[in-house]
View 1: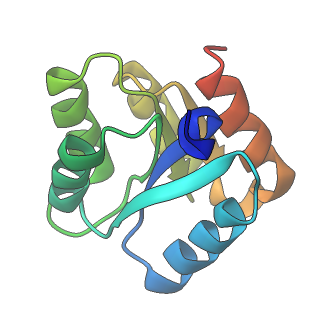
View 2: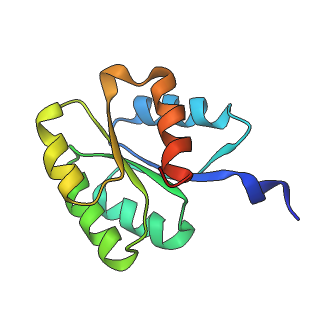
Amino acid sequence: MSADTNMIRILAVDDHPMFLEALSALLGSEPDMKVVAEAASGREAIQQFRTHQPDITLMDLQMPGMNGLDAMAAIRNEFPDARIIILTTYDSEVKNAMNGGARAYLLKTYLGKELLGTIRAVHAGK
């Protein structure tokens, strides 16, 4: 059995390179989490999801081209059990995201420890 068996495999999606880099560094420092792919757009998120089929997807909503809501809809259409956590700056978008099938959401301004706990909770099916 590989050491990765108990790892939470994560796809991180955000169009801001520095945020994506910081997010990946934070998650990579956790013993039970591994960022298996990153994407900077909705279309890239769909492609990376198909390739890696992560346990959890962290999805930004505001991206150029295909936004996070449309990407989430496309992913969940193909993979109905996809566990997607929305990361957003705008709480006005939360209702649409939750109605679209997101398992949870976090405002970027309040990430901190809440991010890690939310990932673990969603992964555990809560």
